[in-house]
Figure 1 (spheres, rainbow over the protein chains, first blue to last red):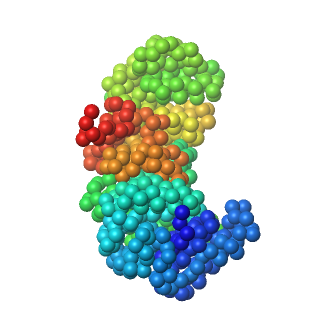
Figure 2: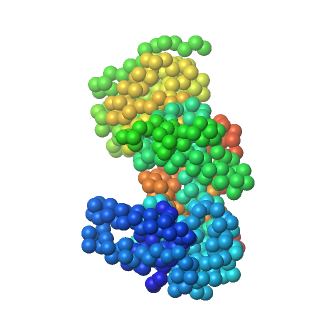
Figure 3: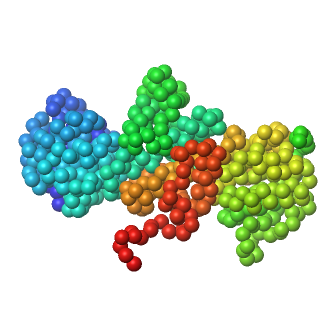
Length: 287
Length: 261
């Protein structure tokens, strides 16, 4: 199985993926261009591990070994021995393409190169590679060190052995892989669209209030959170951008059409919990 | 016709609840009514063997104080059931009718005593929830809605009063999630089992969309989507061909036509 694993990008997702791998006993090269970002990531990882101990998920004597398995680096050539590198940088096609071009020159020919993109085409990102059969999507969910699901995204070029390798890696770090064809939104972001889209339409048509819709879906169907609570948590701007992206990628398919309420909320600066007001209002001590 | 403001009421003790409609909704609500002390009498649309658990009668029993009409897929049958109930019941008895696939107001136009009818959200497997959506029609006086509220409260449910629109809240959201999953499935995005796993582990859904389709019944899901498509006239509610095929055949997978036979 895999011995050398690398992560590009020490933001929230990159740090979470590195921690998930380190917890399973893997040594992880965590790369970022920015030394400060790397230091902050390690601090966050330490805090997350301690929280894991407090919750009884991680044995107390494992804190130092787990953190010690994560090696911060600022040079791509440090990936030379890696069998798998996952990219988790900004969701910008040009940035990701450039990165993959460089990654291919700094990794061995048998290395699998993966992207953690949630909204871009894996095919487009990895089209710059000479060895596209070794390219794949590994879409983790936030927080990556806790959430069990990883969407394993195959392009038309991805080889069966690359898929098998990626699936076994996901199992190895204690998560559940689902295999997905490279299509906009993969499974989760796509199938979850109506949860928000229909809720917004119901509100727009004044069938029910947003509080009622949340209550009905939670107490009537067992959803953990209502769509309006969840949009407030995710950020109404972020949710709007994902919806708009899906709509564009499917060339105007009406099932993905955003709702004017979303734009109005963004225009008003009511972005959800992070701005203190969205569909609900928040103060420092609640929600 | 002007609605009459007749008083509708249920006497809580030994109240008879008459339930008509389709399986498994009739059984679900019969179980709920019996568990909460009602004298339940049922009549299924389908031909089926005599049910040992519940008293079955094609004739609406004298003294029935409240009737439930639980048909979502066969609207002609629903109309006949409602007209029969309206004729047999005293004007004081309320009719609570599932308004998931046809609005309660439209249903009220089928009967004489329009004031007595209110809509509710009845979809298989959701009777376990602690909340139920109810909808007054354009004819329903507050007295009837109070009867409806008291009835569902006696079954341990909190009523959410919503506008009278097909699909209501819960069926519209859940059935569109299932429809989207079926579009993804027919495009070969993934498999039914992995779709379910993804939604449960990725966004903590209580059930995967395919599991949900099976719990609700795929014909019920299709009926909700067809009603939305018909009433709202929007392309976003068109039914995934695979979902329709499933409703007809009971099979998720069609064989690859190029594999030969």
